[in-house]
Amino acid sequence: MIHARDLTFAYPRAGFALNVSALDVAKGERVGIIGPSGTGKTTLLNLVAGLAQPDTGALKVADHDLTALDDGGRRRFRAAQIGFIFQTFALVDYLNAFENILYPYRVGLGLTLDRDVRNRAQALAEACGIAHRLKSHPNALSGGEQQRVAICRALITQPGLILADEATGNLDPETKEVILDVLFARAAEQGATVLAVTHDHDLLPRFDRVIDFATLRQPAEQTS
Ligand SMILES: Nc1ncnc2c1ncn2[C@@H]1O[C@H](COP(=O)(O)OP(=O)(O)OP(=O)(O)O)[C@@H](O)[C@H]1O
Image 1 (cartoon, protein in one colour):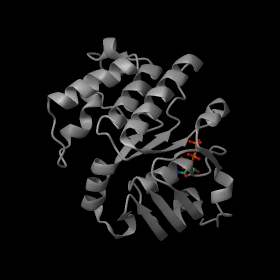
Image 2 (spheres, helix red, strand yellow):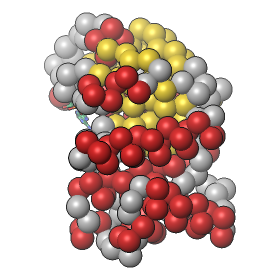
Image 3 (cartoon, rainbow, N blue to C red):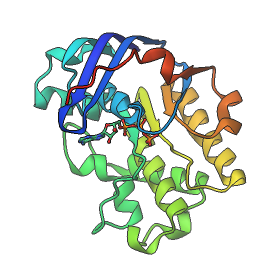
């Protein structure tokens, strides 16, 4: 599902350079990524999602060569393939929780919002314990509730690849387990792959494989 070779990416002004020599994740695998803050884990997820373009290297995701796609191609790839749970949630303030879950259908890109999708949104919200909050806007929701809306939004399109950036970081231990159950159950139903960054070592036994980010990342050249 994911094949990366000799990927490099830099934020020159921040003096940050990422170098991933090889990353391979099979279809249906549930892979956790651990590593210290600021080392580039989110940056790697952004590259895999096509939200950032590698400076050099090869990157194939779901049979798409991401280095060969233009902006529009990457947007269509994301809509069709990726569910991204952002560390900062990235909810839309002026939409309520239900509308936020359905957001991928607002931005078009060939997705059709019908009754099945609405029913799926309702079922996801119920499974995540936020069905009673669906009329509320993000600023009226707790951090944990916002995070669960973000998780439902990532799952609503039934993506083949779920990218999760600290997806349970704002949840209490019990809710964390419930939400991971929902995430993994939905992924299993869809045969989806999960690549999840986490600082939560209690959750690691639940993954098929855990990658220490340091083993992916070769010593970075300072670009400043
Ligand atoms: N948009 C940006 N512009 C410039 N520098 C950035 C940008 N985003 C991230 N960086 C820098 O890139 C480096 C890697 O950031 P990244 O968020 O990928 O790390 P991380 O390992 O996910 O960290 P954490 O575990 O704290 O979330 C950091 O030094 C950060 O300051």
